[in-house]
Length: 390
Ligand code: 6GU
Figure 1 (cartoon, rainbow, N blue to C red):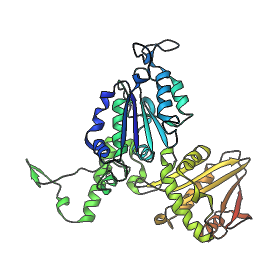
Figure 2 (cartoon, helix red, strand yellow; figure 1 turned 180 degrees about the vertical axis):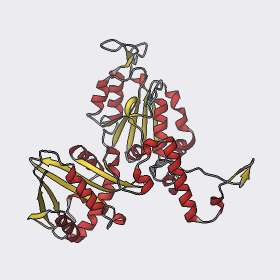
Figure 3 (cartoon, rainbow, N blue to C red; figure 1 turned 180 degrees about the horizontal axis):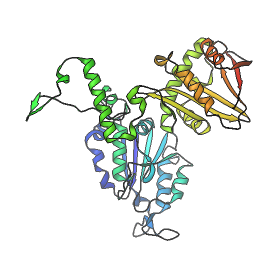
Figure 4 (cartoon, rainbow, N blue to C red; figure 1 turned 60 degrees about the vertical axis):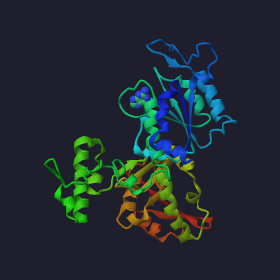
Protein backbone atom coordinates (compact mmCIF):
# COMPACT_ATOMS: atom_id res chain seq x y z
CA UNK A 1 0.00 0.00 0.00
CA UNK A 2 1.19 3.50 -0.81
CA UNK A 3 0.46 6.32 1.63
CA UNK A 4 0.80 10.04 0.83
CA UNK A 5 0.29 12.88 3.29
CA UNK A 6 -0.36 16.50 2.31
CA UNK A 7 0.29 18.73 5.32
CA UNK A 8 1.67 22.11 6.30
CA UNK A 9 3.37 20.43 9.30
CA UNK A 10 5.35 17.49 7.88
CA UNK A 11 7.26 17.12 11.18
CA UNK A 12 3.99 16.17 12.82
CA UNK A 13 4.05 12.95 10.80
CA UNK A 14 7.52 11.87 11.94
CA UNK A 15 5.98 9.04 14.04
CA UNK A 16 5.22 7.25 10.76
CA UNK A 17 8.88 6.25 10.70
CA UNK A 18 8.53 4.63 14.13
CA UNK A 19 6.91 1.58 15.60
CA UNK A 20 4.51 -0.48 13.52
CA UNK A 21 4.20 1.62 10.35
CA UNK A 22 8.00 2.06 10.43
CA UNK A 23 8.45 -1.68 10.52
CA UNK A 24 6.05 -2.10 7.60
CA UNK A 25 8.04 0.44 5.58
CA UNK A 26 11.23 -1.46 6.31
CA UNK A 27 9.62 -4.72 5.19
CA UNK A 28 8.37 -3.18 1.92
CA UNK A 29 4.67 -3.55 2.81
CA UNK A 30 4.24 0.23 2.93
CA UNK A 31 5.51 3.03 0.74
CA UNK A 32 5.17 6.29 2.73
CA UNK A 33 5.50 9.83 1.31
CA UNK A 34 5.05 12.94 3.45
CA UNK A 35 4.67 16.15 1.45
CA UNK A 36 4.87 19.76 2.62
CA UNK A 37 1.87 21.48 1.04
CA UNK A 38 3.99 24.65 0.74
CA UNK A 39 6.01 22.89 -1.96
CA UNK A 40 3.13 23.77 -4.29
CA UNK A 41 3.04 27.49 -3.46
CA UNK A 42 4.74 30.11 -5.62
CA UNK A 43 4.73 33.36 -3.63
CA UNK A 44 7.48 34.65 -1.39
CA UNK A 45 5.51 33.86 1.78
CA UNK A 46 4.52 30.40 0.57
CA UNK A 47 0.91 31.18 1.40
CA UNK A 48 -1.46 28.24 1.89
CA UNK A 49 -4.47 29.99 3.44
CA UNK A 50 -6.74 32.98 2.98
CA UNK A 51 -9.82 34.57 4.55
CA UNK A 52 -13.22 32.93 4.02
CA UNK A 53 -15.63 34.27 1.40
CA UNK A 54 -18.77 35.44 3.16
CA UNK A 55 -16.82 36.47 6.24
CA UNK A 56 -16.34 34.75 9.57
CA UNK A 57 -13.49 33.81 11.85
CA UNK A 58 -10.34 31.93 10.90
CA UNK A 59 -8.64 31.05 7.66
CA UNK A 60 -9.37 28.58 4.87
CA UNK A 61 -6.79 26.44 3.07
CA UNK A 62 -6.51 27.70 -0.51
CA UNK A 63 -7.38 25.43 -3.45
CA UNK A 64 -4.32 26.01 -5.67
CA UNK A 65 -1.60 24.17 -3.68
CA UNK A 66 -3.86 21.12 -3.27
CA UNK A 67 -4.76 21.28 -6.96
CA UNK A 68 -1.13 21.21 -8.03
CA UNK A 69 -0.32 18.50 -5.49
CA UNK A 70 -3.12 16.31 -6.88
CA UNK A 71 -1.94 16.99 -10.44
CA UNK A 72 1.52 15.76 -9.51
CA UNK A 73 0.52 12.86 -7.26
CA UNK A 74 -2.66 11.68 -9.00
CA UNK A 75 -2.20 12.99 -12.53
CA UNK A 76 -0.80 10.86 -15.32
CA UNK A 77 2.76 11.11 -13.98
CA UNK A 78 1.52 10.12 -10.51
CA UNK A 79 -0.27 7.01 -11.70
CA UNK A 80 -3.85 8.35 -11.90
CA UNK A 81 -6.71 8.02 -9.43
CA UNK A 82 -7.46 4.33 -9.93
CA UNK A 83 -7.44 2.39 -6.63
CA UNK A 84 -6.80 5.65 -4.75
CA UNK A 85 -8.82 7.04 -1.87
CA UNK A 86 -8.24 10.63 -0.85
CA UNK A 87 -8.82 10.84 2.90
CA UNK A 88 -9.66 14.33 4.10
CA UNK A 89 -9.37 14.60 7.86
CA UNK A 90 -12.02 16.91 9.25
CA UNK A 91 -14.18 17.05 12.39
CA UNK A 92 -17.20 17.28 10.05
CA UNK A 93 -16.39 13.97 8.34
CA UNK A 94 -18.03 10.56 8.68
CA UNK A 95 -16.99 8.76 11.89
CA UNK A 96 -13.88 6.60 11.69
CA UNK A 97 -14.77 3.06 12.76
CA UNK A 98 -13.29 -0.43 12.56
CA UNK A 99 -15.43 -1.30 9.46
CA UNK A 100 -14.14 1.85 7.75
CA UNK A 101 -10.56 0.89 8.68
CA UNK A 102 -11.21 -2.51 7.09
CA UNK A 103 -12.54 -0.86 3.96
CA UNK A 104 -9.56 1.50 3.63
CA UNK A 105 -7.20 -1.44 4.14
CA UNK A 106 -8.43 -2.82 0.80
CA UNK A 107 -7.28 0.25 -1.17
CA UNK A 108 -4.04 0.35 -3.15
CA UNK A 109 -3.24 3.88 -2.12
CA UNK A 110 -4.43 6.46 0.40
CA UNK A 111 -3.70 10.16 0.00
CA UNK A 112 -4.31 12.05 3.22
CA UNK A 113 -5.20 15.73 2.93
CA UNK A 114 -4.74 17.06 6.44
CA UNK A 115 -7.12 19.90 7.22
CA UNK A 116 -6.16 22.91 9.35
CA UNK A 117 -7.82 26.14 10.47
CA UNK A 118 -11.45 26.41 9.40
CA UNK A 119 -11.00 23.75 6.74
CA UNK A 120 -10.11 23.27 3.08
CA UNK A 121 -11.77 25.17 0.20
CA UNK A 122 -14.73 22.98 -0.83
CA UNK A 123 -13.63 22.99 -4.48
CA UNK A 124 -10.53 20.96 -3.55
CA UNK A 125 -12.87 18.13 -2.55
CA UNK A 126 -15.15 18.61 -5.56
CA UNK A 127 -12.12 18.46 -7.86
CA UNK A 128 -10.58 15.46 -6.09
CA UNK A 129 -13.89 13.60 -6.53
CA UNK A 130 -13.46 13.84 -10.29
CA UNK A 131 -10.19 11.87 -10.15
CA UNK A 132 -10.42 9.57 -7.13
CA UNK A 133 -12.64 8.32 -4.35
CA UNK A 134 -12.80 10.93 -1.58
CA UNK A 135 -13.70 10.23 2.05
CA UNK A 136 -14.06 12.99 4.62
CA UNK A 137 -13.33 11.33 7.95
CA UNK A 138 -13.48 12.42 11.61
CA UNK A 139 -11.88 10.45 14.43
CA UNK A 140 -14.36 11.56 17.08
CA UNK A 141 -16.67 14.23 18.39
CA UNK A 142 -14.09 16.78 19.50
CA UNK A 143 -11.99 19.35 17.66
CA UNK A 144 -8.24 19.05 17.05
CA UNK A 145 -6.14 21.91 15.74
CA UNK A 146 -5.32 19.97 12.62
CA UNK A 147 -5.90 16.68 10.88
CA UNK A 148 -2.34 15.32 11.24
CA UNK A 149 -2.97 13.43 14.47
CA UNK A 150 -6.19 12.07 12.96
CA UNK A 151 -4.26 10.94 9.86
CA UNK A 152 -1.79 9.12 12.13
CA UNK A 153 -4.61 7.41 14.01
CA UNK A 154 -6.34 6.34 10.79
CA UNK A 155 -3.03 5.11 9.39
CA UNK A 156 -2.28 2.95 12.41
CA UNK A 157 -5.75 1.40 12.43
CA UNK A 158 -5.58 0.63 8.70
CA UNK A 159 -1.99 -0.55 8.43
CA UNK A 160 -2.29 -3.15 11.16
CA UNK A 161 -5.06 -4.80 9.08
CA UNK A 162 -2.88 -5.25 6.00
CA UNK A 163 -2.23 -8.90 5.20
CA UNK A 164 1.24 -9.84 6.45
CA UNK A 165 1.44 -6.99 8.93
CA UNK A 166 0.47 -8.67 12.19
CA UNK A 167 2.00 -11.97 13.15
CA UNK A 168 -1.14 -13.37 14.74
CA UNK A 169 -4.39 -13.03 12.79
CA UNK A 170 -6.45 -14.35 15.72
CA UNK A 171 -5.47 -11.34 17.79
CA UNK A 172 -7.15 -9.20 15.12
CA UNK A 173 -10.43 -11.02 15.57
CA UNK A 174 -10.51 -11.30 19.35
CA UNK A 175 -10.39 -7.64 20.14
CA UNK A 176 -12.58 -4.70 20.94
CA UNK A 177 -14.95 -3.59 18.17
CA UNK A 178 -14.45 -6.64 15.98
CA UNK A 179 -17.20 -8.64 17.65
CA UNK A 180 -19.53 -5.69 18.22
CA UNK A 181 -18.62 -5.67 21.93
CA UNK A 182 -15.77 -4.14 23.90
CA UNK A 183 -13.13 -6.63 24.95
CA UNK A 184 -13.30 -8.41 28.31
CA UNK A 185 -10.66 -7.61 30.97
CA UNK A 186 -7.39 -9.53 30.72
CA UNK A 187 -4.95 -10.85 33.35
CA UNK A 188 -1.49 -12.40 33.46
CA UNK A 189 0.75 -13.84 36.19
CA UNK A 190 1.03 -13.62 39.17
CA UNK A 191 -2.34 -15.06 40.24
CA UNK A 192 -2.39 -12.71 43.21
CA UNK A 193 -0.84 -9.23 43.13
CA UNK A 194 -0.96 -6.62 45.95
CA UNK A 195 -4.05 -8.27 47.36
CA UNK A 196 -5.87 -8.42 44.00
CA UNK A 197 -6.67 -11.96 42.85
CA UNK A 198 -7.23 -13.07 39.26
CA UNK A 199 -10.90 -14.18 38.81
CA UNK A 200 -10.84 -17.88 39.75
CA UNK A 201 -12.70 -19.01 36.63
CA UNK A 202 -9.64 -18.07 34.53
CA UNK A 203 -7.55 -20.57 36.55
CA UNK A 204 -10.19 -23.32 36.36
CA UNK A 205 -9.11 -24.83 33.03
CA UNK A 206 -12.82 -25.01 32.09
CA UNK A 207 -12.74 -23.42 28.63
CA UNK A 208 -16.53 -23.31 28.28
CA UNK A 209 -16.86 -21.47 31.59
CA UNK A 210 -14.03 -19.10 30.62
CA UNK A 211 -15.70 -18.26 27.30
CA UNK A 212 -19.04 -17.63 29.06
CA UNK A 213 -17.36 -15.42 31.70
CA UNK A 214 -15.53 -13.40 29.05
CA UNK A 215 -18.69 -12.88 26.99
CA UNK A 216 -20.56 -11.79 30.12
CA UNK A 217 -17.80 -9.34 31.04
CA UNK A 218 -17.72 -7.96 27.49
CA UNK A 219 -21.49 -7.37 27.56
CA UNK A 220 -21.30 -5.67 30.98
CA UNK A 221 -18.46 -3.41 29.95
CA UNK A 222 -20.19 -2.48 26.72
CA UNK A 223 -23.47 -1.75 28.53
CA UNK A 224 -21.65 0.44 31.03
CA UNK A 225 -19.27 2.31 28.75
CA UNK A 226 -20.78 2.16 25.27
CA UNK A 227 -24.51 1.41 25.46
CA UNK A 228 -24.75 2.77 21.90
CA UNK A 229 -22.85 -0.30 20.68
CA UNK A 230 -25.06 -2.77 22.46
CA UNK A 231 -27.32 -4.31 19.87
CA UNK A 232 -29.73 -6.82 21.31
CA UNK A 233 -28.20 -9.31 18.89
CA UNK A 234 -24.78 -9.17 20.54
CA UNK A 235 -26.26 -10.25 23.86
CA UNK A 236 -29.00 -12.65 22.87
CA UNK A 237 -27.79 -13.89 19.52
CA UNK A 238 -31.00 -12.64 17.84
CA UNK A 239 -30.89 -11.24 14.33
CA UNK A 240 -31.19 -7.53 13.72
CA UNK A 241 -31.65 -6.34 10.15
CA UNK A 242 -29.75 -3.10 9.52
CA UNK A 243 -29.29 -0.85 6.54
CA UNK A 244 -25.98 -1.56 4.79
CA UNK A 245 -23.31 1.15 4.82
CA UNK A 246 -20.49 1.60 2.33
CA UNK A 247 -18.01 -0.01 4.67
CA UNK A 248 -20.05 -3.25 4.37
CA UNK A 249 -19.24 -3.57 0.66
CA UNK A 250 -16.19 -5.81 1.10
CA UNK A 251 -18.02 -8.26 3.35
CA UNK A 252 -21.06 -8.26 1.06
CA UNK A 253 -18.80 -9.10 -1.89
CA UNK A 254 -17.20 -11.96 0.03
CA UNK A 255 -20.58 -13.36 1.06
CA UNK A 256 -21.94 -12.88 -2.45
CA UNK A 257 -19.08 -14.87 -3.99
CA UNK A 258 -19.55 -17.69 -1.46
CA UNK A 259 -23.30 -17.84 -2.09
CA UNK A 260 -23.27 -17.60 -5.86
CA UNK A 261 -20.63 -20.27 -6.33
CA UNK A 262 -23.30 -22.60 -4.95
CA UNK A 263 -25.82 -21.14 -7.37
CA UNK A 264 -23.40 -21.60 -10.25
CA UNK A 265 -22.98 -25.27 -9.37
CA UNK A 266 -26.73 -25.83 -8.90
CA UNK A 267 -27.41 -24.30 -12.33
CA UNK A 268 -24.23 -25.39 -14.11
CA UNK A 269 -23.69 -21.75 -15.09
CA UNK A 270 -20.54 -19.83 -14.23
CA UNK A 271 -21.69 -16.72 -16.08
CA UNK A 272 -24.12 -15.44 -13.43
CA UNK A 273 -23.42 -11.73 -12.73
CA UNK A 274 -22.96 -11.82 -8.90
CA UNK A 275 -19.86 -13.98 -9.43
CA UNK A 276 -18.25 -11.42 -11.67
CA UNK A 277 -18.59 -8.19 -9.69
CA UNK A 278 -15.71 -6.40 -8.02
CA UNK A 279 -15.61 -4.33 -4.87
CA UNK A 280 -16.23 -1.04 -6.69
CA UNK A 281 -19.37 -2.43 -8.36
CA UNK A 282 -20.75 -3.68 -5.06
CA UNK A 283 -19.97 -0.33 -3.40
CA UNK A 284 -21.71 1.55 -6.22
CA UNK A 285 -24.78 -0.65 -6.08
CA UNK A 286 -25.20 0.29 -2.40
CA UNK A 287 -26.12 3.75 -3.66
CA UNK A 288 -28.63 2.38 -6.18
CA UNK A 289 -30.41 -0.18 -4.02
CA UNK A 290 -31.83 -0.22 -0.49
CA UNK A 291 -29.52 -2.87 0.94
CA UNK A 292 -29.88 -4.58 4.30
CA UNK A 293 -27.50 -6.75 6.31
CA UNK A 294 -27.58 -9.03 9.35
CA UNK A 295 -24.53 -9.55 11.54
CA UNK A 296 -23.76 -12.33 13.99
CA UNK A 297 -20.99 -11.50 16.47
CA UNK A 298 -19.87 -8.67 14.22
CA UNK A 299 -19.68 -10.82 11.11
CA UNK A 300 -21.90 -10.06 8.13
CA UNK A 301 -23.88 -13.27 7.54
CA UNK A 302 -26.87 -12.19 5.48
CA UNK A 303 -28.02 -9.52 3.08
CA UNK A 304 -30.84 -8.56 0.72
CA UNK A 305 -31.68 -5.53 -1.38
CA UNK A 306 -34.67 -3.89 -3.06
CA UNK A 307 -35.43 -1.06 -5.48
CA UNK A 308 -38.37 0.30 -7.36
CA UNK A 309 -38.77 -0.24 -11.11
CA UNK A 310 -41.99 1.53 -12.10
CA UNK A 311 -44.53 0.03 -9.72
CA UNK A 312 -42.52 -3.19 -9.26
CA UNK A 313 -40.38 -3.65 -6.12
CA UNK A 314 -37.38 -5.66 -7.27
CA UNK A 315 -35.90 -7.85 -4.54
CA UNK A 316 -32.44 -9.28 -5.11
CA UNK A 317 -29.16 -10.58 -3.81
CA UNK A 318 -30.80 -12.51 -1.01
CA UNK A 319 -27.88 -14.30 0.63
CA UNK A 320 -27.09 -16.20 3.81
CA UNK A 321 -23.65 -17.44 4.87
CA UNK A 322 -23.30 -21.21 4.33
CA UNK A 323 -22.86 -21.97 8.06
CA UNK A 324 -25.95 -19.94 9.03
CA UNK A 325 -28.46 -21.63 6.71
CA UNK A 326 -31.49 -23.64 7.76
CA UNK A 327 -32.44 -21.40 10.69
CA UNK A 328 -34.86 -19.05 8.98
CA UNK A 329 -32.51 -16.16 8.26
CA UNK A 330 -33.30 -16.23 4.52
CA UNK A 331 -37.01 -16.12 5.30
CA UNK A 332 -36.47 -13.19 7.69
CA UNK A 333 -34.53 -11.25 5.04
CA UNK A 334 -37.20 -11.99 2.41
CA UNK A 335 -39.92 -10.74 4.76
CA UNK A 336 -37.89 -7.65 5.52
CA UNK A 337 -37.30 -6.90 1.85
CA UNK A 338 -41.07 -7.06 1.28
CA UNK A 339 -41.91 -5.00 4.36
CA UNK A 340 -39.73 -2.08 3.24
CA UNK A 341 -41.31 -1.76 -0.22
CA UNK A 342 -42.47 1.82 -0.73
CA UNK A 343 -46.16 2.76 -0.99
CA UNK A 344 -45.97 3.09 -4.78
CA UNK A 345 -45.13 -0.59 -5.33
CA UNK A 346 -47.90 -2.86 -6.67
CA UNK A 347 -45.95 -6.11 -6.86
CA UNK A 348 -42.68 -7.79 -5.83
CA UNK A 349 -40.35 -9.38 -8.34
CA UNK A 350 -37.28 -11.52 -7.89
CA UNK A 351 -35.07 -13.78 -9.97
CA UNK A 352 -33.44 -17.11 -9.25
CA UNK A 353 -31.79 -19.90 -11.21
CA UNK A 354 -34.27 -22.40 -12.61
CA UNK A 355 -32.16 -25.14 -11.01
CA UNK A 356 -32.10 -23.53 -7.56
CA UNK A 357 -34.58 -25.89 -5.90
CA UNK A 358 -34.10 -24.57 -2.34
CA UNK A 359 -34.66 -20.96 -3.40
CA UNK A 360 -37.71 -21.80 -5.50
CA UNK A 361 -39.22 -23.72 -2.58
CA UNK A 362 -38.70 -20.81 -0.18
CA UNK A 363 -40.10 -18.22 -2.60
CA UNK A 364 -43.19 -20.31 -3.39
CA UNK A 365 -43.82 -20.84 0.30
CA UNK A 366 -43.67 -17.04 0.73
CA UNK A 367 -46.42 -16.59 -1.88
CA UNK A 368 -44.33 -15.96 -5.00
CA UNK A 369 -45.23 -17.62 -8.30
CA UNK A 370 -43.02 -18.30 -11.31
CA UNK A 371 -44.09 -15.79 -13.95
CA UNK A 372 -41.71 -16.89 -16.68
CA UNK A 373 -38.38 -18.60 -17.25
CA UNK A 374 -36.03 -16.49 -19.32
CA UNK A 375 -33.84 -17.85 -22.05
CA UNK A 376 -30.40 -18.34 -20.46
CA UNK A 377 -28.20 -21.18 -19.23
CA UNK A 378 -29.69 -20.99 -15.73
CA UNK A 379 -33.11 -19.61 -16.71
CA UNK A 380 -33.42 -17.49 -14.73
CA UNK A 381 -36.88 -17.91 -13.33
CA UNK A 382 -38.78 -14.67 -12.72
CA UNK A 383 -41.06 -14.84 -9.69
CA UNK A 384 -43.65 -12.25 -8.75
CA UNK A 385 -46.19 -11.65 -6.01
CA UNK A 386 -48.93 -9.04 -5.89
CA UNK A 387 -48.75 -6.67 -2.96
CA UNK A 388 -51.91 -6.64 -0.88
CA UNK A 389 -52.12 -3.82 1.63
CA UNK A 390 -54.59 -3.74 4.47
CL1 6GU B 1 -10.05 14.34 11.42
N1 6GU B 1 -9.55 16.77 12.32
C1 6GU B 1 -9.67 17.73 13.25
N2 6GU B 1 -9.09 18.91 13.02
N3 6GU B 1 -10.33 17.59 14.38
C2 6GU B 1 -10.91 16.40 14.58
C3 6GU B 1 -10.83 15.36 13.67
C4 6GU B 1 -10.14 15.57 12.53
N4 6GU B 1 -11.52 14.31 14.15
C5 6GU B 1 -11.99 14.70 15.32
N5 6GU B 1 -11.63 15.96 15.58
